[in-house]
Image 1: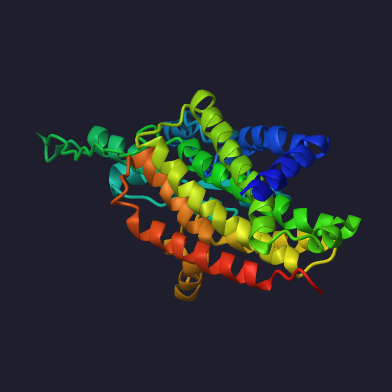
Image 2: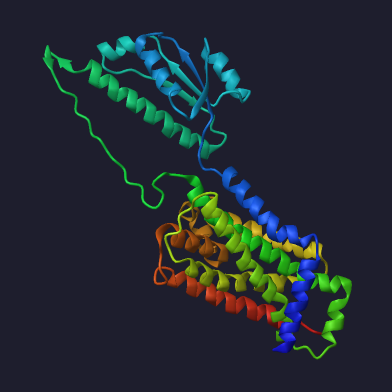
Length: 374
C-alpha cells in the first residue's frame, strides 16, 4: 500500500509541476463548457427571408407582416421577379423565397382558396426542415385568421368560427432551452476527453524519457504501478466533473433534479472505463503523438455515436447496435436522466451494470497487455 501511495504522490507532483498541463486541467474545461454550450445550438435563427409580392393587396401585406413579426426571420428583401430571387439564393444571400401570386386576395374572397410558392435553401437538410416548420406555422396562423374574418358570413347568415386550441405541456425543459440539453452532454465530453488523453499519454511519456525502463527493473508490482499511475487521473476526472457541474448551475442555471451523489457514483465507475482505454492505448504506442492520434480516433467515433448531437433513435439499425458498445452513450443518457428527470438508482440500473461490465473487461485487457519486460 505504501508503494502505491508513493507512486500516487509522485504522479500528483509531476502533474502539478508540468506548467502546460495545468491549463488543460483547469482552464480548458471552463472555457470549452462556456463556448461550446453557447455555440452548439439546435435552434435555427436569422433565416434570411425574401419575397415576391405580385398581388400587393391588404392580405399579402398582412401575410408578409406576420413573417416580419417573427424572431426567426431577417432581411425581408422584396424582389420584382422570381429569376432575380433565385439568383440571390444561388449566391447564398437568401434562405427562403415566398412568392405571392396575382389575385391572391381576390381568390381568397371568391374561391376561398389560393396557392403560395415557397422555395427553401435545403443544402442543410436539417435546417431546411426546421425552417419549413416555422413557415407552415406562420401560414397556418394567417390562414386561421383569414378564415375567421372573411368566411364568417355564408348566405347572409353569420357563422361563428370554430377554433381548436392546443396547450402543450413541455416536461423536463419547459422553456425549450437547448442549453438544458447540451450542457450536461458537453460536460460528459470534457470529462472523457481530458481523462482519456492524459491517461493515454502519461505512460507513453515515461517511455519517451526513459523512466519507464528504470521503474520496470524495480520490485514494484504491475498492479501497484498501474493503480498509482491511473488513480490521479481518476481524481482529476471527478474534479473536472465538479467544476463543470458548478458552471452548469451558476452560469447556465441547469436544473439538478436528481441526486448529485448518484452522478458521482456513476462517474467513478465510468472513469475506470476511460482510464482502461487510455492504458490500453499507451501499451501499444511509443510516442505521445501516436497515443494522441489513436485516442482522438476513438473519441470522434464515440462522440458522433453517443447521442450528444444527434438522437440515437434516428440512426440506422446497424448504427444503433454499434452504439451499445459506446460508453459515452450511457454517460450522456444517465447524466441527462439524473439532472433533468430526477432519475434514481433503479432507473439507471441497466446502463450502470453495462458500464461496470465494460470497466472490468477493458481494465482486464489493459492490465494483461501491459508488460514490464519487452
